[in-house]
Image 1: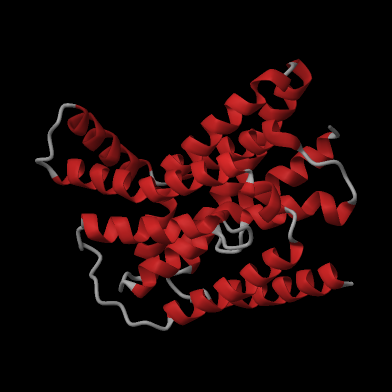
Image 2: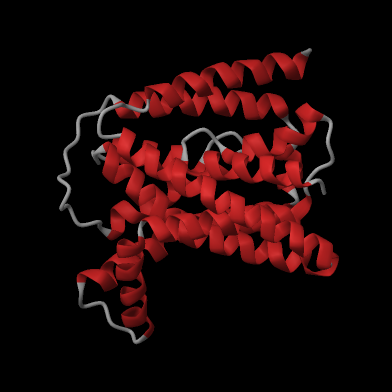
Length: 268
C-alpha cells in the first residue's frame, strides 16, 4: 500500500477516533470516495492500536488506577475506589462486547457498512442528540464517583455505536451529558471506556487477519499505527483543552453537514 495512503488513513483514524464525529464513517467512506482499495482488516487493527496507545498515554494516571483496581479484582476484592472503578469499566464494556459478537456472528456488520445513507442519517441524527444532551445542566461535580448503575447505562449507550456513523465517543459523551456529567468529565469517561473496547476489537481483528499477514503488510501496519498514535494524541489533547471554553456545537454542525452530504451522495 502506498505510504501516503497509509498516512492519510492513520490521520483519519487518529483525528476522528476520539472526536465525536465517527471514525468508522470516515474510514469506511474513504476508499469509496477516493476510488482506492479498501485498507483491509490488518490496517484497521493497526490504526486502532495506535489510538489505543494515544489514550493510554494521555490518561496514564487514570489508566494506572484502573490497572491497580484490576489487580485487586483478579484476587476477588472490591474494597478500594480503584477496584470499584475497574469493576465499573468492566460492567460498561459488557454490552458492547455482547452486541459486537452478535453482529459478527450474524455478519450484520458488512450490511451496515455498505449503507452510505444509513451512515449519513446516523451522523445527522446522533449529532442532533449530542447537541440536545449538551444543553442539559450539569448535576455531578468533578469528584463524583462513578457507580455500577451509571456504568451499565453508559455501556448500553456505547453499544449503539455499532451503527456506522454513530461515533463511539459521541454516543457515550451524549449519554454522560444526559446523566449530568460536565463536558470534560463526560469526555474523559468516554475516552477511558474506549480502552477495553479497542482491545477487544483489535484482538478479534488480529485473529481474523493473522492468516493474511506478511512482512510487507506488517511494515505497513507499523507505519499506520505510529501515525495514528501521534495524530490521536494531538487531537485528544486539543479537544480536552477546547472543552474548557467551547461546547460540542462545532462537532454537531460538522456532523449535520457531512451527514447531509452523504445522504445526497448516496441517492445521486
